[in-house]
Length: 96
Image (cartoon, rainbow, N blue to C red):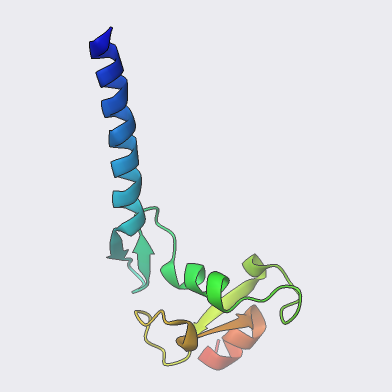
């Protein structure tokens, strides 16, 4: 019975460790953006937390916006460097 408890405890600790390893691991994708272990874009997380202001400043939900790096450095994810734009505004800046 004790071995079953230890096995379950080891499994729970493994799940917790795996979560934190994935959460804090970083890699650069093929387009040059930094992603976390869950393959989510870091600059979108930072912009959502520090720049996005719904419904006061931004009228649409976050998923309808693009995030623009002001200095055009994809690895600079500081909140001061991120700007929330509509897709049309973002295309005009990059000339699409």
